[in-house]
Length: 139
Image (tube, rainbow, N blue to C red; front, side, top):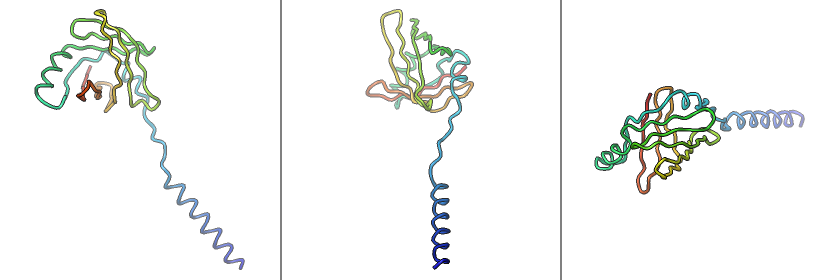
């Protein structure tokens, strides 16, 4: 009987160790703020799904420059108008929320899904209904 009890404890303990090792671990995402705020981002390219939309949106975004500051403010130059506003990441820094007001009275409130962000390349996607655009900015 004692051996059976010991065997049961060994099996239970082994099972707990096995279950613990199979649990998902929290993925650690590197802090993206230093890369985002390192310099002004300049529009490079986009993919809107087809050639006509690509050409249309490339005209709109050509020459676009956006700067993100460490204090959560940002500046944007889009099609000859200047804008200023705020930005913030979600908790795991996979979504960048921006809110910008322009000198011509227009506003831009968007959530960008970050595909990749390095010191020299910002790649994200966002929706302009009914289209989803994948954008690339560099510096």
